[in-house]
Image (cartoon, rainbow, N blue to C red; front, side):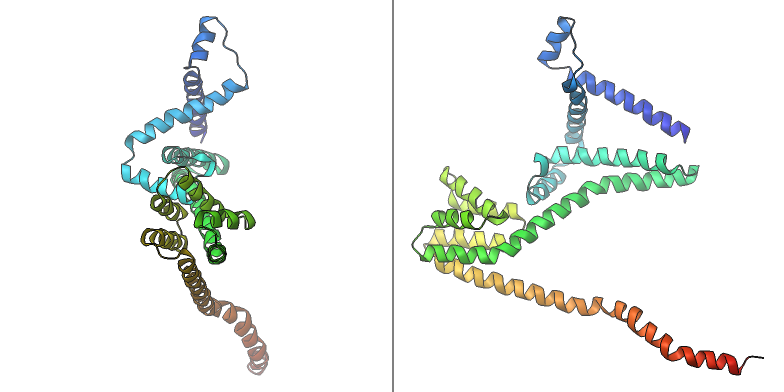
Length: 292
């Protein structure tokens, strides 16, 4: 394992030096070099990471197919664009995670030669999948949050529209008094419409970036109502009832699934101890009878 540790240290030094060279490529760095002054401050140290990251990002965007980047972009939007990452940056994070985990895990465990190879491959695969798991959890949490808020939000929008407010004013009032993720998304769509974006396009984008079927159906119903002149309050009320029925059905399906999941714990923690209690004395008596 000494050769692996030495190679890792050598690779880290080379990459750090190359990243520092990239970070000095700007005009400020050229001016400092021309004056013979290359300050080594915290900005230069941070520039090492930024330069290396930009170099990897350019290489990643060159060999990734377009459909893979589109899929990553869509899932990043569903997750709320965490840390402002785009598709190329997220894929670069995956590669760095695979490299870091693939190097650190074998160095920490120090297995034999054959086991080191297997462990390295497994660690690289695990490190590559870790950002995907993190992104999936973020997207799932956002989706469940908006799904739980959709019925009450649609009800409140219907009440506000029935009280005489237009849809955009109703969105503003409801989002102001019921803060949450869904309210912020509707306020974003409202701001886009106020800025001149077509209403149908803004509502369609709201449904697409939510990643939630219920929110997509609600936004689509609003866009359809505005297109054909249907009273928005009636559409919102119908959507609220539909969303509540769907939530009730999901809860019923989840409750039915619990009956299957509870069979094994019941067998393990109830019937097995009961069998021991009932059959234990009989087994002990039989041992006493047949004892030589």
